[in-house]
Length: 366
Image (cartoon, rainbow, N blue to C red; front, side):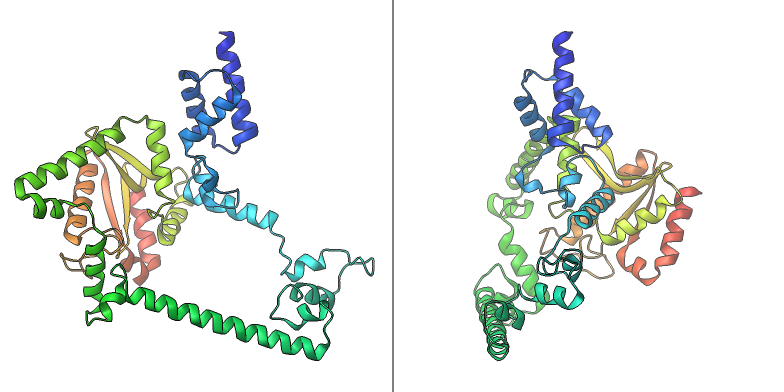
């Protein structure tokens, strides 16, 4: 009993004083994981265990980044606001006029004037005459040096741009490689996507034949899913949160819809999860009152009004027809589980934002 009490106290100390800012619901889950583990009572070992569980590394960033807050259990919207608040409270830039106006000028003993503040902030930029004046050059020499520096930077930028254009035109992983050889932009996107796909169902079938290829592909999918299923619920939640910072992002419009709904339904759930036959998890954008709203970006979900069935997304490497099938399966599963589903397309939202927002509220509340 004494050991458990000490372990609990040490775990709380680590989360409160070393890792910090873990959201309350995740805090309790992590504490239970620590108490059920066999890591011992050493604070350093406890900290290492918790950081691994949450995916907190040096690349997670500081309080100024969304990722810092997301891995600690905060929603994307909350993380955005937290990061923004911390940036504002810690933002001190020598290039800002306000920074200097808030300081005492050591030469005069009083606050900097606007003219003095402008001189100080510009004296940090080699493309400004103030920079050279502060180094002892005359007014005329400083103006000349500032212009020369600016011209040099412009030429350097242009040269880098040309070098980048050449690189992109000679790499098979870039659209420019194919457009410079007569392909249309759409054809080039397809060619790039093909060059980047290393393992897929189509590649397996092409390499091993229909039956053997499908068997190899299915076996790899099953092994990947089994690895995921073997993880604890805490680890699965951590993986889902990390996905939000690695390309599977929440769009600006989805955030806008969510914030609008919260004004009417404060307890709305974002990134709602349903387990599918213990094999995988479906994550839905918004849920309240047994009703789900899925926001589909036209590009990522291959809006049928805009893309043909053979379109391959150059970023996700997924065929439009396959994306439609997986989206349909996901929606049907939610309906089978007793949920109503409303799908909002990006293009429809942009055409009439007010009407779509009203439609979302009416759907969730009626």
